[in-house]
Image (cartoon, rainbow, N blue to C red; front, side):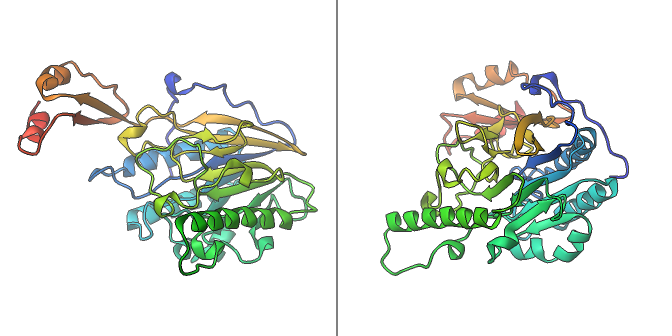
Length: 353
């Protein structure tokens, strides 16, 4: 990160109004999630795309005068990420600290190891990075006041991915419906207890979470959090005590409530071909007193993914006429032959064509 490269945002990606200048006296947050460092696409490495995103993010923080980044889970793709992913993560933390002026707040996701995220907690704290890999037992310990406890402009409720042991006591003979109801009740109570711990603070409370909210649009790259979809909740799980809820887990950026204040930031790069048409973004939040406004900041497309659906009879003609859009990095294409059978050498035919 000694040489931060700038990448222009393509006009086709800038579908929302530009982020305005930071208002005087406001505190500015950036909501991102689901980096999935170390994740390949099939056997293809995404390291170059992740490197370019993190370079872009450092520059976006500087250009937009961001005071704090909220990373809502799934920093890594697996509980035991490769060394290259760990190095990229720590290099980013160091570069952000060296750049100065921006705090990093991270919650653990269902792909992350809570123990691994929290192992260097004290060292990271010295680098203005706060990590909640697992749920703190004391609700008061889940509240992070920014820029500090003496003069908070905003309070973050750090609620990571909630596991069964955080939410309920299992009983023999429970049905799926009973488990589902108990999990939902446990999640609701967790957010109520956390909000109660922030009572008395004269600043907005921003919730975080890594879970499924019902009604949200999913892509093929997400892993079910609970078996059979257990653990999904509705938007009204989050009480009016929360001015905004910064969510992770689902990879499409979207709001789950009519007011647009319970939101998934989505993943910064397309993690599967089902996301080829998604506009990736991070969210910018401005807090001034008890007022909150938020904006979309599109993430540039560093590598384009394209998908072609065809049949055996038209395969050659369809591929001959297929011209996927170019990007900074080589475009990757998925060809779906809908009537292929195991007996044919269709894979070899496609690759040759």
